[in-house]
Length: 479
Image: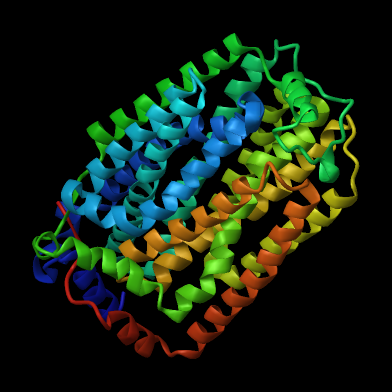
């Protein structure tokens, strides 16, 4: 690792190089780094077994007046505000470990609220989860990037390669939660008999509004039996509780450095806002929103207008398991092969896959031919693996010394994509939603290519000096 990388890491973590790096094996050995990577990844696996499994079902189990989709829209709308104002304040006062634990408690409360789904229970719980979402993801991203850079120092490897690899491992666990969460729902709902709506128009021409008589009949025809839904929610709540315990008992703490503890909270909030003025971040906003739009489409629209509408809610879990398996394995592979392929070929492949699938779904009339649903889900998962793994890592590489505001911005704009998708979900036909996603994808890829081109034009030493500009105090130190 170059001297500039080591100096940069000193600025970022507040480490004493003479003490901390020379004794890295004593304080934070490779095994300790990997153990904490496993702890974070395992906890997120359990937490999102519950949340992702439940999100995939919201448009089906809480379809009355569009309550389920409205709760998801509320989550991501609140997450926008959370990403802007809350992470710096919470992380400063709780530290990374307890920020993660407290945020996971809020996710679990939302899951439990689904035992009594109503506007006065689910929407407040959605707001609570949205407020917790940005601190959770900002602290996780900072934790992974920091231990990844430390691992790179120990093994004298390139920090961006190791960080990308760590994110790949994390998203292997994270996307695997699709498998367990959806397997739980499918096994429980397999005995349900109220699961088909073959008399309705499905696919790209599906135009469920959530408020008229026809929408009510679709909802009643596809909603699973309530006692089965409660069994699923009970299992999901237990998974969330276990995730909190894993973090509380197993994760090594990271605390704000002494300099950062004395910083004014408004300054930390201002750092998030100021970073929005960086032209690189402005260029990445559309592609970051695509990350939210494409996930929301798969969770809320594909499952509802293609799967549930035509073959029944009991197949949602199995189809999304396929999506999750491909997503998880591809996330790991994407992180491992990035050192040979680079990011640009992976981003380009993901964009082409999404466009090709949306064109196919526009002209395809859904039938009971099951393999087609699994093929679509698999390729969509392959593309999503690239968006999740490489875009997260790219933010860490592009803004290595402004990680906290950078990842807050990432979650803010990804949440904006989620919110936009869920907000118009009950008002637009499926083909219109795919057209909107395609437009964002085209603009987003253009902005991404510009940032890569500009980055490649800057020599590495100059790039490192630019990254150090404006760094006045460290962010985190490892205990």
